[in-house]
Length: 218
Image (cartoon, rainbow, N blue to C red; front, top):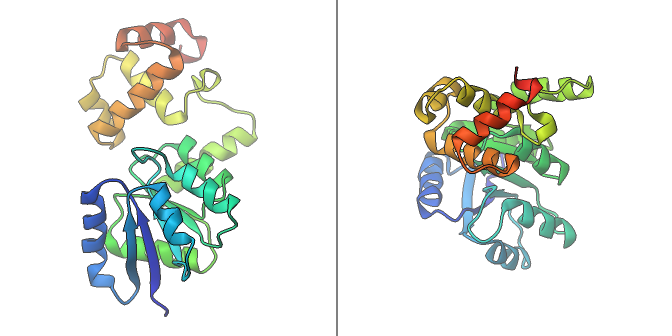
């Protein structure tokens, strides 16, 4: 099989080094031919052939995002599949990426062998979703198709954010929530920030107050 030529876009050097190290034992299957930290640098490289087989990008970058990169690649008619490689298992991010034309959404918890297998499927023409979230996302899509919504959906909260808000209402700490949902504490904190912003509150107590006033959380 042809070795997959991979462009990696991530603003954390430790992630870039980690992916390179993880793929070192799979060098005959996937090769990181370039690694950049910004959308601008990625577009500059993509302006000159040869193109990589896949662009693997984080959803969030310091000065921009993987979504902006995908939009620019589409606008410039650059024929290269874009796959998101991120720590965010948020279905809102996933749906947004797929709607914009992403060919995959993978989590950074994947092993080297898993990553190689998922990237190979993308090269073979599949749209690939990380197995750890695919089932949950399929269920959510089915519920949305039936007109069913989770508590807090009308407030703009994603399913994961609603889960976390419900656990906050129960008095659980950030650490306990992370353990309960098998998430990292930093991921939970990121979701909390998003919840506060969407509910237009500044604290956990204010978020709980909003939830308790909302009939969908009762």
